[in-house]
Length: 91
Image (tube, rainbow, N blue to C red; front, top):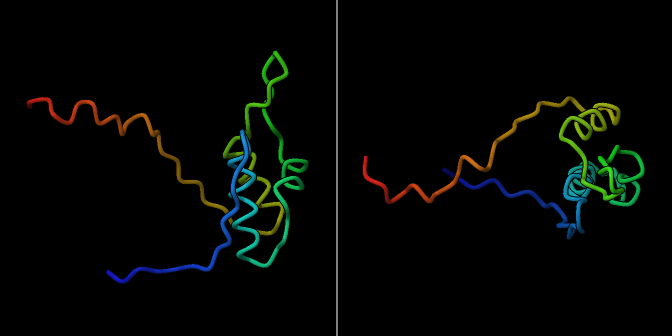
């Protein structure tokens, strides 16, 4: 299989802004230049009872992309299922 390379500027994400940083990278690929800070203001962020910012949901960013004029399909994965601690166990 031949690799497909895309010219995407890597944006270093800060704490609790992985969704916004990735959104900025995707938008920039499509020549929409929005900063992580701009997207943080436009996309809802969950906040704990203690006032700590917890981050945004995939649903929030999907809605954001729809509002930007994109068609959206969500693919999710539970990373905890990749627990390799069982790899050496016998069948």
